[in-house]
Length: 185
Image 1 (cartoon, rainbow, N blue to C red):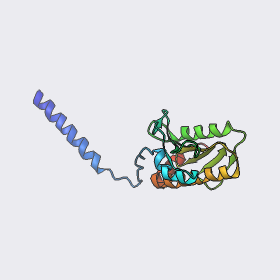
Image 2: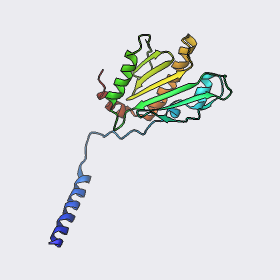
Image 3: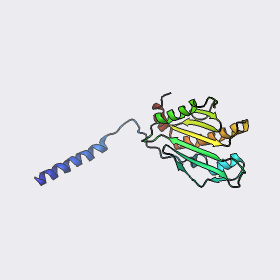
């Protein structure tokens, strides 16, 4: 009886292994996207250049609030510049793009003082002290100071443009197309 059972189990395993390699799909599959760290979207050098002072990563380093990763850069010399914070909420196996979009949209709806910004990501708005961007299944939120001047807006736009250009090299257009299909607009 043990021999028959062993032979049946071996045949079942062989059959299942053989069937795995035979399927050739003409539709390409989207591979998983690695977790994107906020310090790759905006590096300390990028933040320093925009702030006009030497910045360094805060003692907290990269933080995780359960749905997003954040990094804060602070002035090397106390008071030389405002901190720059970069936060990214990214789609994953456990966080669908529809939820990322909903979080972005809820953030926008809560701010009556927001202004849309054209040409950055799929959707972008400023609500001081933040610029908020939705692109390729990710919600990026950046702050750099607390003003609401044209100079402050330009600084936020420059940082967001840089972050989106990096993001778009990390998340393929194919993966972005898959994420777009899940977004309810």
